[in-house]
Image 1: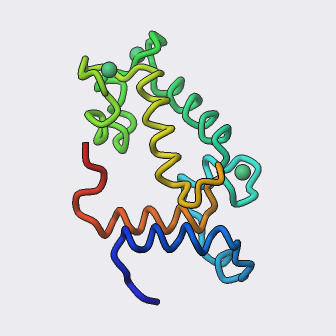
Image 2: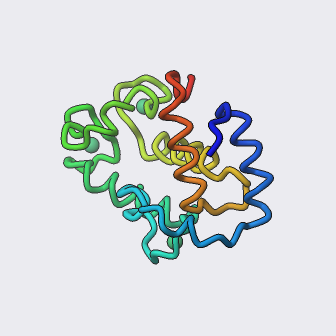
Length: 141
Ligand SMILES: [Ca+2]
Ligand SMILES: [Ca+2]
Ligand SMILES: [Ca+2]
């Protein structure tokens, strides 16, 4: 496998994925835990609805006092989100609202949906998360 620059890889992926390769080797890749958690009907595709459902459920779970806002204290039980607190909290008021949460979820979905067909396949998910791990800066902004 060639290791190309992340950007080149993403644009290449957009081209190749639109052709929908039917190779069985993709299926042999284990889905990451987060992917399986979101992919409710286990068809190997995350739709925007599945993504939203999963996020709302997680939001409700973390929002202990049910005020529709996530505080850093509430997020203590969810370290991955706590680490991204500043990214989620767009207006920097120290709370993550469901709107901020949804907006970032949308951004993330678009990022994952390499070929822009409104569905995130396992192949896309693995490709993007790998590319992100390789680039030290990750998401700027
Ligand atoms: Ca699915
Ligand atoms: Ca709360
Ligand atoms: Ca906020």
